[in-house]
Amino acid sequence: MTMEQTSISFDKACIFGAGAIGGWMGAALARAGCQLSAVARGAALQALRTQGLTLVHGEQREHFALRAEQDPAALGVQDLVIISVKAPGMPDVAEHIAPLIGPQTVVLTAMNGVPWWFLQGGVDASVRGRQLKAVDPEGRIAQAIPLGQVLGSVVHASCSNDAPGVVRRHFGNSLILGEPLATGPCQPPTPRLAALAQLLQRGGIEAKVSDNIQRDAWYKLWGNMTVNPVSALTGATSDRILGDDLVRGLITRVMLEAKEIGARIGLPINESPEDRHAVTLKLGAFKTSMLQDVEAGKPVELDALVGAVREMGQLCGVDTPFTDALLGLARLQARQKGLMA
Image (cartoon, rainbow, N blue to C red; front, side, top):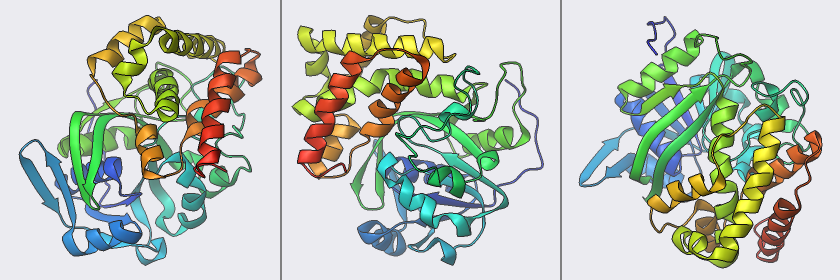
């Protein structure tokens, strides 16, 4: 798709949640010439203030200067705010993000699972406009972040933190961008969407524009809503999970339930679970992000990855016994470890 140059600029950009994915995106923004800042706390805040941001890929190390603050009010209104926290951190973001957002600020979400805006566009009219209690139970996120200023994204990059402020990119370098309120496939990209894609491309990320960001988010979720919680329960890497016939069968049943939900809400998937298993197996043995969180004693993203799917099943009349069982077991484990309320 050819995108015309626009007059929109993102001179001031802030990363809210400067972890692995936030750091990867922040590096691209700095390369593209943005005045970069970050909202961080603890060891990450100290490292970013004293050492800046470091991105490692293979033998290459790049260093970028930025301003890091714990209080968003110290940074003021931004042209672009990227939210790259895990889903359990969103209530805290909602409480503190206001000083960063002006009338023209674009807020880009770069998160796993189902975001709070998921049913506001790009889905069937039967569920469009519904609030997902699994991810925004009291509507506080929707109240804090103006929906008309939000862009969504789907990340296709594997990154981790070698240390606070030091991000390592393993594989993948692409990002899909889209308008959460878009309702038709024939609409051209909005000026802000085109401008942001161009900015990220200048910074070295393979940024693509989608005419339905919900579809792309749903397809990614279809693969990781199962392997993630199973890995958290078992401690196993992806290859061992899919190499066990019984576990693979359970995962297939959950994916078939999600596939039926997608068909009913206007997000059909034309592949079979076995097609997706083959893709996952090609990635080799890896620890999912949820397993890494469990091992690190961090809150897990079960509501955004599995709970929201179950809720959408209830909204469109799809029974989800296998999804329910997986969610119940993984939730019980997380609560026993103090990783989930």
